[in-house]
Image 1 (cartoon, rainbow, N blue to C red):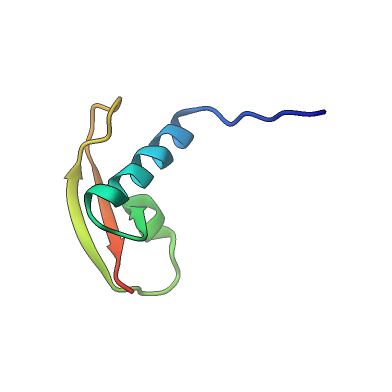
Image 2: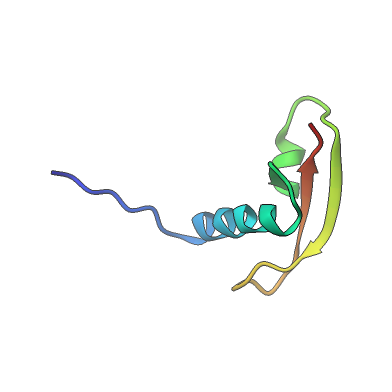
Length: 66
């Protein structure tokens, strides 16, 4: 039997963004970094300066408008 674990800063930030979905009543939230990587325009609402627990700098998040 094999077991896998995923650890690191990226995983922690992704988990915190998932938690932010509940706070902002969003189905999908993405980071500013991810939004800049997309090749197409999508309708979003900006959530500025979201504080991520365990990080010193706030992140800009985007709520995907469905």
